[in-house]
Length: 112
Image (cartoon, rainbow, N blue to C red; front, side, top):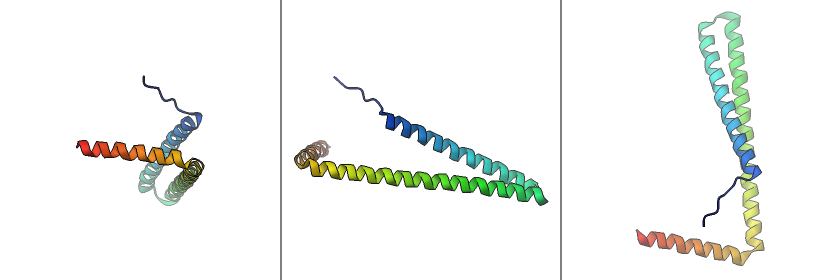
């Protein structure tokens, strides 16, 4: 009987954050593209304003990318620490799991 995996609240929040981030980046890029087109047609003060708006939007997008990068690094470090702690707390269980995975991979390779 197969068990059905359900998302944890953290996974749901993470997926929602990812969707929001992607939507924000796409919106920012669309705004920048629109502003650049308008700036190409505009002259004088209007062109300067549009360029400034585009640069502001680029800065916001860059900051969002840096924030996401930092968050992903922090999550990765947290996962590495949790794995390290688990292996140190349960060495025989970790060895057993690694052995089973090795046997399965070996069986799959031998079948080919």
